[in-house]
Length: 385
Image (cartoon, rainbow, N blue to C red):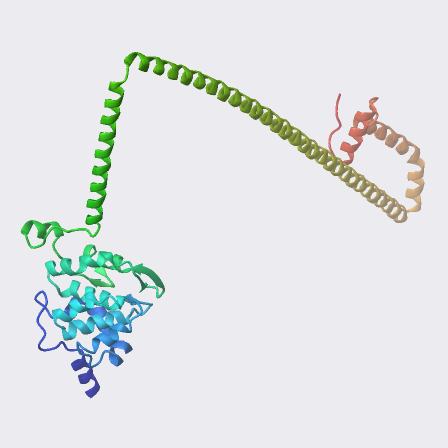
């Protein structure tokens, strides 16, 4: 219980602090971020008991800026020190000295961030706009915990133009042109304005010098003989036209020769591609024909084997049937069958002749006869031609 009371006292705002924008200065930070800062180890160990004088030493130890990071949204030391400045509310002169510090860039960014949260609009523009000329690199911790490089002028531009920075909602400020129209701020003067004025003076001097040279040349040519000048101009123009025609003819011959070479190279490449394509087609066609022959040979062997198996099975079945029939018949039946054997053999012979004539294997064309034999072995009807 005593530790909780002590922690509550440590997180309380200085009683002498003034309200900022009608509220407690610490309320400028959202409640969730504020509770994360209060639970952070850096806040409990390093920020406890800090004053405006000892805060400078902790600010000089900073090596990066940022808001919260990681899955549990841990605050950075930079954010803890911003919260401590809101708690103790240092004087304006101390904050201005932070901003004007050229040796420690993170101290400068800390002062600028605090002034953006608590200062009035005119002071924010007056003290932060000169920092646009600070191009030093600073490290910034992103929400995923990785570091990224940025610059001081980019951080200042974010403070002056964005609504959020380092997971804190920045108070709204008036636009600069509004303050200029009200007379609160003077027109912004660029650091490069003197350089621009010097460049303009140089351009004016060069322009004056060119005008004087042109006037002198006009006077010089005006004093010379017009007839002689016309003759000299005519000769100069004739030489110029002749040289121009010669150059044009030479360029035309060169371009025509280049065009002829390009056409020859293009024809050679086209013939080479055509030969390569023909060779590839012949090779692929030869491979396909060879594969087809092999496939047909395998199919033919398979059909022959199947035909041989079926014939052997049918012969074996017929032998078994005959053997079984003769063994089961009586002597009288044997005699009767032996007597009727010639007639049955005749009928059987006629039937086989009829079947032979019907299956088309006795066709005069040997190819059709062979095809009918194959179809008969497969159980298909013969070809009728």
